[in-house]
Image 1 (cartoon, rainbow, N blue to C red):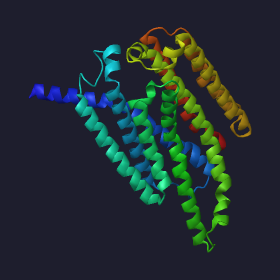
Image 2 (cartoon, rainbow, N blue to C red):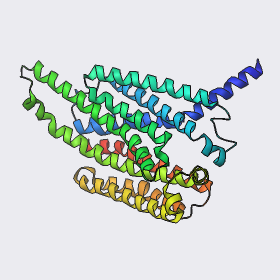
Image 3 (cartoon, helix red, strand yellow):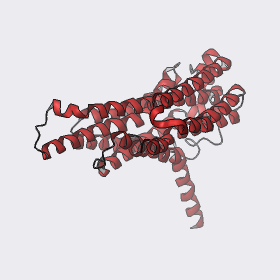
Image 4 (tube, helix red, strand yellow):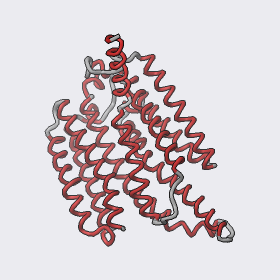
Length: 336
């Protein structure tokens, strides 16, 4: 019995590791922060809120899409992981290839069903297609495109960023439905002209979320570029065409450092363009968080030679992404 319990615990641990449970929770937390701290603040209507059931379905859908993405990535990286991390790889050691593929199929099937349900609830095929495209991007990224110069980095960054953009798309639909119901309740005729009264709010939503999405896209591109450094040995053996392999690690470092600079310029633009609302407190937040950790990240990227250096760099990127998302709490406070 004791051996059975230990065995089951080990299997459960492997399942948790392959789906990167902490990262799944972080993605869902980011979506909730975007909804409650950014979009609700921008909309500023106390009586309005996205229906809780719709918000829950959106988060669960994203969770299954991301979990499937992590599993299929490990499935297709089996040969690379055999070279880079033969003892710590999950697929092939703790979980068989067939089990990994079955997990991916199950997660993807659930995600597709939930995407259809969202489309039915919102009566919008376009919203369903947003989630379907996320599934497709993660599949093509893992199966082949991550090995193609630049394309892999772009697809990874785009698929991650879409988890944020999808919140704004669903929020827009929910707001317009609520607005139409309010017009009908007050005896107004609902048409394109009356609905256009909500356009300034929608435009402001997409302006703020657009800047945040571009910022997260850049950080995710940096993250995948650092992953290319970390996986360089195995990806070279598998004849992948990543930036460090094609142009060399030195050029890859220069590109990473340039993108860190770009990310900080986007932060500064966001702060200065909203300075009349955000005040000097937001500048202090930026200096003490994103700027400080970007300096540290730049140092470690410049001196990055070993896998442990890459892990430090990746953790610093995760922290910077966290700071960008959590700025929403300050955004809500300063706009109150």
